[in-house]
Image 1 (cartoon, rainbow, N blue to C red):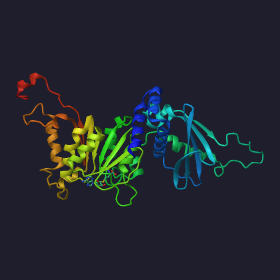
Image 2 (image 1 turned 60 degrees about the vertical axis):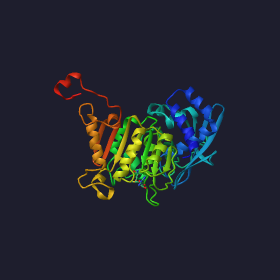
Image 3 (image 1 turned 180 degrees about the horizontal axis):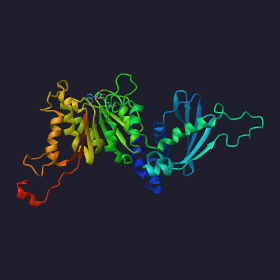
Image 4 (image 1 turned 30 degrees about the vertical axis):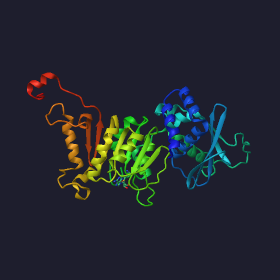
Amino acid sequence: MSSEHFKAVEPLVAVAAGSEADVFAAVDQIGFADAAACLFTEWADRCAPLSLPEELALHVRLDWRDESRDHGFVFGPAGMTATPGVPAAAAARVGISLVHLVRLLFGPAHLRESARWTHRMLPENPELPGRDAPRLTPDNDPRPPIGRATQALLGVRQAPALEDLAVRFGSDKWGSAHWYTPHYARHFGPWRDEPVRLLEIGIGGFGDSGYEGGSLHMWQHYFPRGLVFGVDITEKKVTGSRIRTFRGDQNDPEFLARLAAEHGPFDIVIDDGSHRNDHVLTSFDALFPHVRDGGLYVIEDLQSSYWTRFGGTPDGTGATTVSKLKTLIDGLHHQEHRLGSTAVERNVTELHFYHNIAFIRKEVNDECGPAWLRRFGIDPR
Ligand SMILES: C[S@@+](CC[C@H](N)C(=O)[O-])C[C@H]1O[C@@H](n2cnc3c(N)ncnc32)[C@H](O)[C@@H]1O
C-alpha cells in the first residue's frame, strides 16, 4: 500500500482505542475524504471471502458530522468488488458513523464488539405480498444471501484463527511444509489487539502461484491494528491495506539498517528468507537492535544449520544459526559466568525452541542473584 495510505492508517489505528474526541481530532487532521477512503479500503480488504451465485449489492453509508460517503460492496460468482458511490439495485443498506467504523475495523476486541450500525433491507417500504404470493422457500427466500453478505462485511469484528488465515492466504507456516502457527499463536496471541509493527524477511510465492505474500496477508488479518512490512530479494507485488513491501537483500546490513531506521523499531521480526546461515546471522545482527524492548525476533527453518547447501555443517557447529542461538543460552546467565557477554546477550531474556523454529525475546537481562551467592564462588567478581 502507498505511503499516503499508511499516513491515514497509523493515526486511525492509534485513536481507535481512545475516546470519540480522539477520533474526531484525528479525522479533522486527516480530512474526512482521505479517512473514508482509507476505511473503505481496509474494510474491502478484511471482508470475508464470499461468492454468491447471483449478484447482490450492499450499500454502505458512512456518516461524519453533516457529511456522508457511499460505498457499494457487490458480491457475485467471482467474489466481492467494492466501489465508491451508491450501488445499483442494492438489497440492503448499512449505515455507520465514522467513529463506529474506526472502532469496528481498528479497535481492540471489546471496542470492535461495541461498534453499532443500522441495517435496512431495500426497498425500505415494500408492497405487502398479496394473498396469492408464492410462499417463501429456501429456493426463493431473498434473505439468506443478504445475511451472508452482511456477515462477510460485519464479521470483521471477529478474530479469525491463525491456521484459517494461513490456509486462506497460502502461507506454508501451517498445513504443508511446516506446523509453526500454534507456536506463533502462543507467542503473538497477547499482542493481537496491539498496534504492532511486524517485519518479515521473505515474502514468498513462486511464479504465478497466486500465493505471493501469503504470510503478510495472514499477519495483516491476524493483527487488525498492526502494520506489516515485508522484505524480499525479488520484486513482489503484494497489496494489502496495512502491508508495505521493500525489495532488498537480507544479507545487506546497510539496507536493513536504513529500512529499520525509517520504519522501526519493530515489535516483531521474522526471518523466513533464504535460510542461508550467513544471511540469517547478518540479518539478526542488523535487525535485533531495532526490535522494541519486550519484542520478539523469530527465526524459521533452523534445520538449515545442518545443511551444507545452506552454509550449515552436518553437526550444526561453526558459523550456523543453531550455534549462535546456543551462545545466547549461555548469555542468558551472563551475570553468573565468566564468559563475558555481548550487547545482544545482555538484552535477551527468553529463548523458545520448537521443531525448526526459535523465538528470541529482546529485553534487558539484568536479573542477578543475591550477593551471598558469591560465597559459593558462583559469582566470583
Ligand atoms: C519461504 S519463502 C517466504 C514465505 C512466506 N514468508 C510465507 O510464509 O508465506 C522465502 C522467500 O525469501 C526470499 N529470499 C531469498 N533470498 C533472500 C535474500 N537474500 N533476501 C531477502 N529475501 C530472500 C525468496 O525470494 C522467497 O520469496
